[in-house]
Image (cartoon, rainbow, N blue to C red; front, side, top):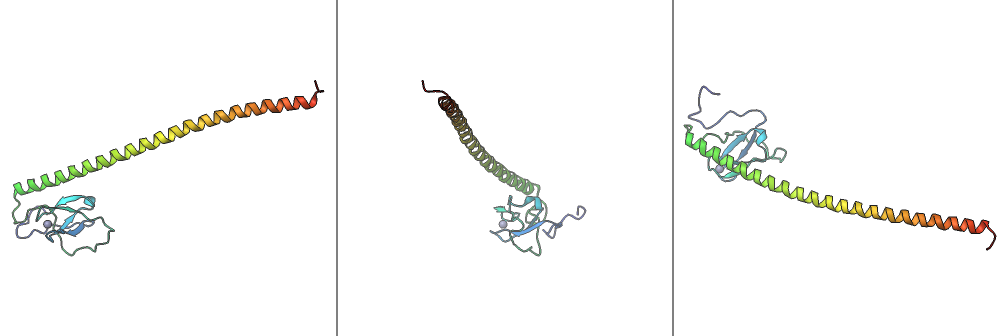
Length: 154
Ligand SMILES: [Zn+2]
C-alpha cells in the first residue's frame, strides 16, 4: 500500500478488524483500527471530534470507509497531517486528563472506604475487649456461685 500513494481517491486500505463508522457531523466514512474503539478522533473531513464506536454497540458495518488520516483534497499535505495529529494528540490528552480525574476520584472513594472499614475494625476490637472483660466477670461470678454452693454457710 506504499507504492501508489492515494491521489485520486481518499479511500485507504481497510484491514480486517477495523471499525467502520460515519462522522455524525459531515457523514464522512471512516475506518480505524479496533484499538481506537471508544476514543475521540478528529474527523478527516470536518475535523470535529468524533467518538469511535465500540463494537457490539450494534452498528452494522458500513460498506466503504476511509481512514481519517489523509486530508480531504487528494495530495497528502504534511501541514494537514500535522494538524490532524495535533488534534488527535490534544484529544488524547483530554481523555488522559479525564481518566486521571476519574482515577483520582476512585482513589479518594477507596481511601474513604478504607477509613470507614478501619474505624469499624477499631470498634469491633473495642467490642471484643468489652466482651472479654464481661466474660471474665461472668467467670468470676460463676466461680463464686460454685463456691457458695459447695461450702457451708458462713
Ligand atoms: Zn466530519
